[in-house]
Length: 50
Image 1: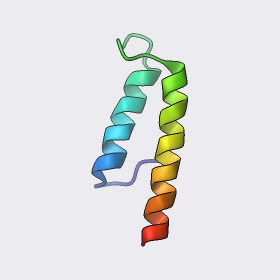
Image 2: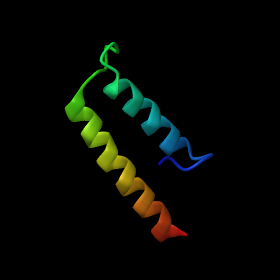
Image 3: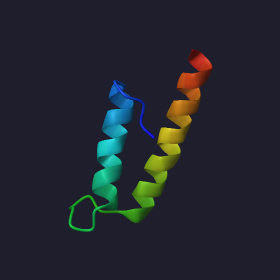
Image 4: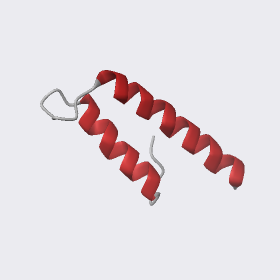
């Protein structure tokens, strides 16, 4: 789940939405999985930095 008011989370959420949307030119299930991993790593790094 993206963190509210986080620009990185917002950008990743938008990329994920497009990667999961079959009608999007950016549709790519493999990329969607990569973005989920990237979001998790970003959130973990953010929590460690608090």
